[in-house]
Amino acid sequence: MVCLVAMSDDSQADSPGDSSRPWLELAPDYERARTREDSLDRIVEWPAQRDLLGDVTGRSVLDLGCGNGGKLAELVRDGATASVGVDVSGNFLSDPPPGVEFIRGDLSELDSVPGLAGRRFDRILFLQSFGYAKDPVRTLQAARAMLADDGFILLTRTQPIRYAVERAEQNGTSLGEEYFSTASFSYVSGWNDHITLTKRPYTISALLNVFSAAGLWIEAAIEPQLSEDARRRYPHKQAWMNKYLGILLFKLRPIPASGSVLSAG
Ligand SMILES: C[S@@+](CC[C@H](N)C(=O)[O-])C[C@H]1O[C@@H](n2cnc3c(N)ncnc32)[C@H](O)[C@@H]1O
Image (cartoon, rainbow, N blue to C red; front, side, top):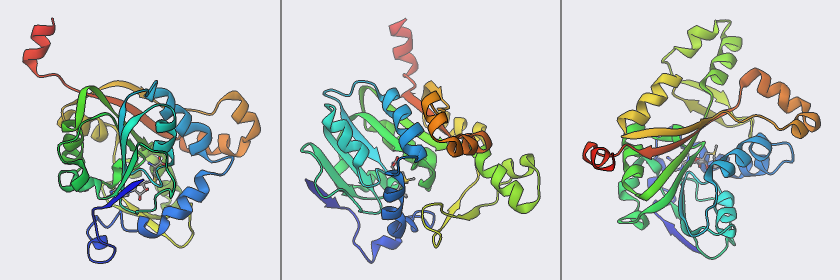
């Protein structure tokens, strides 16, 4: 395994945005929760993400905010090549398969992550990590510039309605008031009761406008749900989904330059 460190443990660990800092401590708790038999990542999110990625044989993958890199390792076992995982936490698998490289770095500063300079990837992933970008359009533009020909970005985000429902309950307000609120909010992470995460609110239209501003179009959008079997086995998770909806998945491709549209037509 190659593990590059793009940030030192002390001085630069403070450099990611405030919203990323809790992950320096939270990462192992998240990975523990993810391996639970009934975790939503395991029963809904990863199967849908994997499905949208399709056959990865011979494809290079860049996973931004990769966590411990377990998903990337699985893609390499499925045939992906020359793949890189970047995460601010540095909490990576100790024995990934050959062909996986981990870099401790900040997805808000993709231009200055050393191991990425001049590289191109067939698939670029932001799986529940895009919300930590300080400047979302800039981060997506930097990712777009790293796409190989015919490459695409797979980006997932929590349904913003989930946070609006939670805050409306907590604050005794309405869904609309919270959904359209612009004030940052904090909540105790479900993975460790002692760690608070802070989020900027977003609406679905704001998210779609970020894609357009970064020069990307949506080839597919999915709102994955539990399978029939999972509903029967994990009714408490179906109850959670009934209330909070789950996540959104987007397959994004660069908008072709107008000249290439004309010549293609
Ligand atoms: C909810 S976890 C998702 C992990 C993984 N992508 C998955 O789908 O299981 C969010 C991840 O984003 C990482 N992260 C947060 N801020 C980041 C930043 N500024 N740069 C890189 N990674 C970041 C966290 O360390 C964490 O691993």
